[in-house]
Image (cartoon, rainbow over all chains, first blue to last red; front, side, top):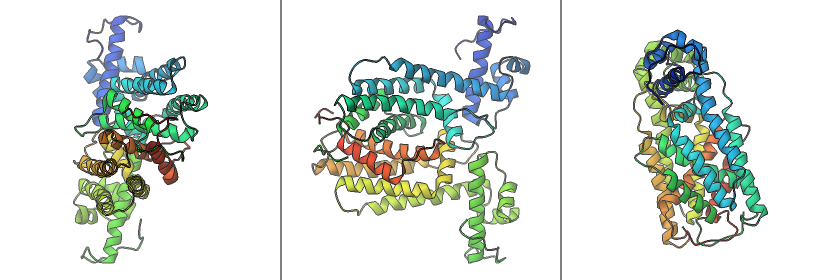
Length: 213
Length: 213
């Protein structure tokens, strides 16, 4: 929770006191969706954990669907900003990829609970959750990686290979770093580990550099 | 479902008729866990979908927890066999990695629904599901990859790098191939795509081979 100020009782959602209530509701919903799952969480539990009454939730988010969509929208808008912000990046293609992946990993670390909710709903059963277009964001990130790789190939920094396959190799590194953290094993790749794995993919693991695709 | 023979009505679980009932129950539970989630699925729904009565489920699996554990146990025993079977593999380290990953991907494709249940429970909320030690299997697979990589380094096939990081790069490729399939985008890496991505990781994507780690 970003703030634990008590609700100021004002009606205007833009007031700081109400902003705090809104955040309390979002944080409570995230916690419950992460622990119990979306389907098993009730509006009653969310308002109870946030210390407000049901009409307060209805006022800000209309219903459980609304609070879920708002959570996802906030996290994925930040992903979108991150991608847009990377477009003016300078340096080699490798440096750009390292930076883009580092930023995504950092964003993920700041939103681990939301990521967990996303994983369970995206890969698992929908649980009655309303449709959220995760794929469009996944594709945007993939396209950002691919664009940098194509630039790297064009400038001779990367070899003339299949940019799609190269994109998957990079996405594999970021996925594994995220999943090691989401999993329950006492292992952690972290930002440094992710950068090391990416450099390995740039350089390859074979002792001799082949030219085969 | 492997068989749709009617239950033969015999008491002995080893009879073929009963084996078919057991499979019907497992298939029905997998379907429901995948569609509705573990928590939201009831014993009544499982037996309804399998066309049997509750006591039949209790006889074979005791309860919902039992049928879930059996599902996971069956799938992960096959992973264990796959790993054990790979130990006598011949060829270069790259060939062994390609083969091991191909086998895992094939096993996953034969158990997509079980994988989906695993993803939602492992990465998402536990949903009241009994503990299943997914991590021990993940670690076993990771160790199998690492063992081949260390052998590759020792024999000079792979360069002298960090075998742990190399292992993550390989696991990233397999994860991404699996997740592209589990996801909802109109994309598919498939067995061939996975092999291409792995070869890319062997060879690297940089045009010039560096010696830096």
